[in-house]
Image (tube, rainbow, N blue to C red; front, side, top):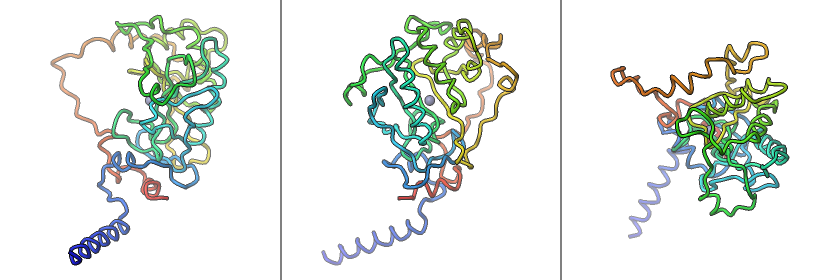
Length: 299
Ligand SMILES: [Zn+2]
C-alpha cells in the first residue's frame, strides 16, 4: 500500500514538473484554458491582440450591483473587463439614470476574468473592451442573484425583422446616443431596424450615429466596443470603414436598407456552401498573442 502511495506521489510530482516546464501546451484549446480561470491575473491592465483573438491582463470585476447598474447572469462570471470598460459602464449607467424610464443599466457579458476565447456565445469579448448591455429598461436595481439568472431582456424588433416593435422607445435612442457620445467608444452594434429608426428620428447633432452599426442579432441587447486603451500597445486597433472616415458620416445612407430587404431573403439553396471558417472556439493557445501565455499562467 505504502509503495503504491509513494508511486502515485512520484507520478504526480513528475507531471507537475512537466507542466511547470511547459506551462501551457501550444496546441491546447484556448477557450478551455481561459474558461477555467476564475480570477484576474495580478498584472498591470493590458489588452493583447484582437477583439476576437486575444486576452486581458489585470482585469477588474464590475461590482455585481451599483447605484445605477446590475450585472446579470452572474453564474457566467463574465462581469470582468479592462479598467477602462468598468469605468465606462459606471459612467454610462449614471448618465442613463437621468433618461426617462431608465433607472440605470442591466449589464450582460463583458469578458472572462482573463479575457480570451469562450466556450459558449461570443466570438469577440476577448479583450475586456466589449460589453453587452440589455435593451430592457431596469424597473429595479435590487434584483437577487436568482432573479438575474431568470429574467430576460425583451426584443425591440418586429416579428418580420423590418422595424422596431413597441418595446422600443425614444428613450432607447437617448441611451444609445449617450453611449455613442462617450469618447472611449469605438463602435456600437445593434439590430438594423433600431439604427434605421434612429436615422429617421435623431434631431440636432447627428455625428454620434456614425458609431452605431447595424448588425445581425443584437435586438435584446446592444454591444459596446471601446477603443484600444492608451497603455495597451499590443491591442489591435480596428480600422475605420470608408464611410466612417467621410466627414459628417452617420451611416444613414440608402445601403442601410439592405438589412431589412436583401438580408432577409432566404439563401439560395443552390449556392455553394462557404468554407467553414475557424472561429474563437477553434483557437489553440498558439493562435493567440504570445503574451496570452503569460496572462494565463500569472498569479
Ligand atoms: Zn456582444
